[in-house]
Every structure is written in C-alpha cells, then in structure tokens.
Length: 239
Image 1 (cartoon, rainbow, N blue to C red):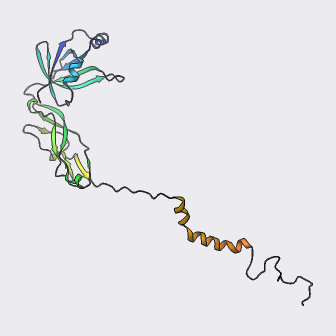
Image 2 (image 1 turned 180 degrees about the vertical axis):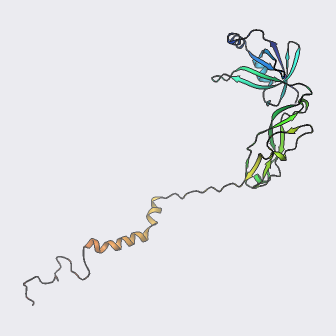
Image 3 (image 1 turned 180 degrees about the horizontal axis):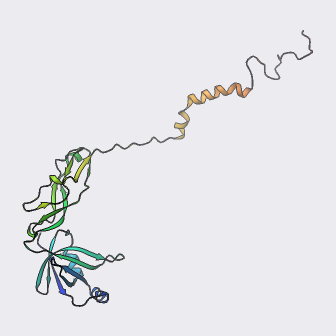
C-alpha cells in the first residue's frame, strides 16, 4: 500500500474562536507532536483527510506536507462531534527515520479453520499486538493463518510469525484465536391441552376411585339412607 500523503498549512492563530472559523471553512485544526516535545500547529482540508485516511490503522505512517516541509507521522487521535460525528481536531505523532518506535498493529485472521468446518465456533479475543521496530519495518497489519486450527485448540501470540526486524512486546500467552465445540440447542417440549389431558390418565383414575366412597359417604356394610332393606329401628318387632 502506498503511503498516504496529506496536504496541510501552518496555523499561526490559536484558540476556540479560531478553531471554529477553520471548521466553518471546511478544514480541520490539527497538531503534529514531535519526539523532542515540539509541536507544529496546522490545519487541513476535512474532505481530503477523511478520504485519504479511510481504512488506515493506528500503525499506518502517513506523510503530512506542511508548506513544503514533510513529516512522517501516525494519526494518534481524532476528536469528533458527538452529535454529527464531524472531526473537530486531529493529533499526529511524528516518527523519525532510523529511530526505533513502538506501535500497536492489528491482527487479521486468514483461512478457514478445520475446527470450524467440523462444526466448531471460532473466537478471536485478541485483535492487535504491540511491536517494536524501525519505521521502515512497521507493518500496517499482521496476517495470522488459522487454517490448521482444530476444535478445542488455541492459537497464541507467541505463535505469530513476524517479519525480520519486528520485535513483539505483547504478552506471548495471549490467545489470538480458538475453536470451541458448538453447544447443542435444547428445545423444551411445548405442552398442549391434548398433551396435558392425556398425560395423567392413571392419576385421574386413581383420584376417581378414591373419591367414590367418600363422595357417597358410605361405610362398608352400612346401607344408604332410605334403603328399603334398612335395619329395623328401636322398638320395632321382628317379623
């Protein structure tokens, strides 16, 4: 990828009122911070910045040309309006040729994992690593091949292959990617009226049987009230 080139102008005036005036003109106030502590105040066309930096990462070095002078720098931060999302201010951090630097580089997973093809679920808990190198050796991204990753296996930061001259500074035991077993979905049975009615025939029969004598109010061997064969009352003579 060719280096992004941004055109800018020196900014002599400062303050909130001046920044608002710059934004009304379709430009963005910005600052380039140097390694020695010096700072250069600039402004640049808003549309050109958005178009030129689309898709870049924090580890992408851009070239900022200010009134004939060039600066190689990172885009370290862009302050945005929380309402409309427009960029209000940009911070650049200058890098010097031949001076070792540290930067966070995004990881990009490549390939179709064996474990995923067998039904596993891919997880990617680590999305970037910190590296140390010269500006000329700094990668914009690091591609990680996960094709051989099997179910219940993990790929760690220590497994990443780095280009010559690039030193890793992130924890080597961090998990970059892993494939887990997919959990089977348990579907609860839906109870219908018919199911509920036919599910307890034994219970209903038992309950009916037990309730019969209680409902009649009878005891074994005792005739019901009003029975013609009722026992003779007191004072009656036997036939």
